[in-house]
Length: 118
Image (cartoon, rainbow, N blue to C red; front, side, top):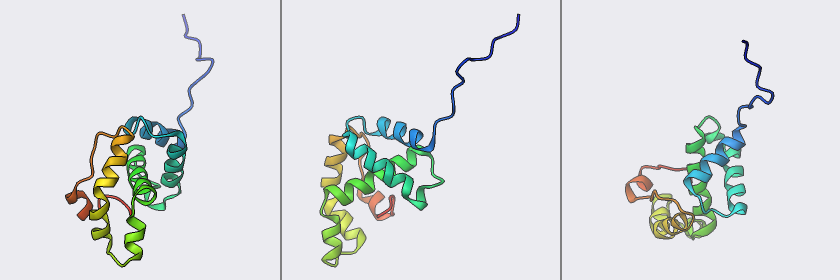
């Protein structure tokens, strides 16, 4: 007996769908509006173009939260260097991530090593 072909073969997920799914796993409580903005940011980043979906979602989320929900940009405008500005917003950044249900925390060592994009 021959097998029938699957009447609705599953298409591979698009890059957007893969990053959205990764973000949903990483940050299960991120609001829809923020999730859309994070995915847009990750997909627009030339540096994340070849990254795994989980990496793109993580780095896009951290950069988005840092710029939107902390005083990071203001500190840079005041003349602080990136490492110093990241140090001063670390607690606020981790609080946002925790609110979104993210288990991983950003630490000083990760910040100092340039673990994420600005």
